[in-house]
Length: 196
Picture (tube, rainbow, N blue to C red):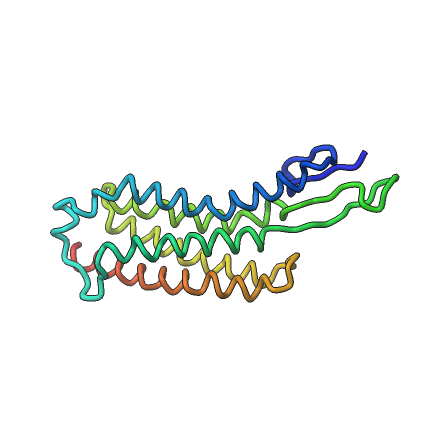
């Protein structure tokens, strides 16, 4: 019997709803970074006005807080969009009956490890920054976030991609993110050095 698979995680009998499930998954992949990032921002939003944060010595280059509320949603949509393209795949695996007995959609689990870690470190920054020993721990997390963002760009550029333009789109989506993370790393380092 013919099957449709989502990477190497789940397979189901081939039927007309496969395309709907795949499109729903793509929309979830696009929107999930935005939803999680904005939820974390909403939970910790009041902390930016906390006297503990407001009284910290900050870099002369530290932008006003509202800038973060503008930049991050755009970056999260770019991240989700490139993830939905770069982690998508479509390939046929023949069986004894058909040349395309199994259609596999999305990359295998191993391709998701580095991009997922990149996002996890990104999402961990604010809770850790506002936690105990947050300036130092936040600096470590933002450095890891930057390293894994660079590794994600390298992975998306070197892996075989279903869409031929994925490498270009990965650069357009992830280079602004990497530049912003580099700036955020500088700000986090400066904040730590000024207040340790």
